[in-house]
Image (cartoon, rainbow, N blue to C red; front, side, top):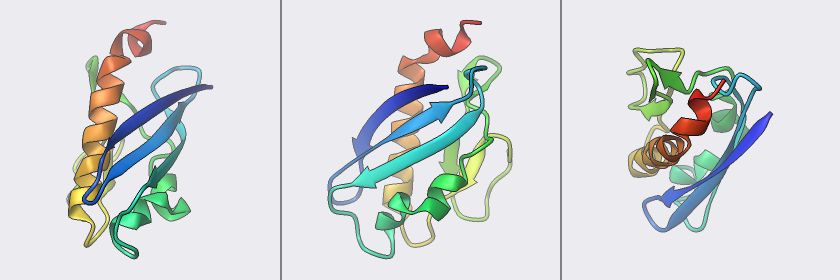
Length: 114
């Protein structure tokens, strides 16, 4: 397994987390997200097991580019790569997506190594 730290910004402050990948570097084994001050019951839901478990089994790269992401609730088009955003926590969900895309892009050379 590989564990990659990621950092970003939510609605009210910093958000951060870890993405754990299987040895193929393309399948999410698990995630952990937390925050400094997101709204309880909305953006703060990124710290719940329910949201974090949605990432398990998702793929990170599609055609060599980062494809793992969070999309508007109910708008998942690529089930292998996307999870539903938190309803009512749009800005925090976008922050999680940006955080994932930014940091996994930094790790792309490593992720592409076989």
